Image (cartoon, rainbow, N blue to C red):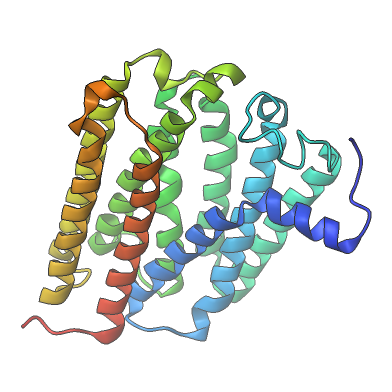
Length: 298
């Protein structure tokens, strides 16, 4: 099948699939989290910029699917996407991608400021212009690619009127950066054989499963450590927040340790990928609630 959707409902379904809605929602939520940590409030001021970043993320995801449409045909996980399945033609997908990105950038600019818009565009440029082509060349692309996770909170931060030089932002952004690495690796590890079949330089070609489990667990430890130190830089200081972050970190490490407990019996990475995403949502919720409630250190 090769062509275009026949009605509005089919077009809407195509746009949603191209946009990778769940990932784009997480980007928008991290933007909102950055704003709340920066200001300690929820305000209409952040609504439109968050929507703009969401649209930018949707457009960037659609552009990524356009870039990888030929490779996606070789993986069971991705061959049902709109482009490799022939449900939409490449030119239409490209128009959708750039339309979403243009509208998103415009919404951010007119509802906040130039710096916020440039940061939003930088996320797309880095994802589509750096990470996407780089991951076809090296398994280490996930490390520079992790910068993608650090930028959206900075957008919320500058919308709230705070400086990019603020050390509180750097602590939060560093956590999002570190989290992105095991998040990316666990996705690659989960579908390693499919990536090999598609011609990607998969980690499964370079390391044994026990080695991969140990390396990934070390990144999970780094993620937990990066989270625990956030209050030391001033982004929340209540005992309840500190305790919550500490308990969440223990849970993440315990979950990640399952990767190496039965290391010689084979490892499934699906549960760890799910848990590290849950962990990120918990951390964003705790940091946001601490600032909104302005909990005392007692």
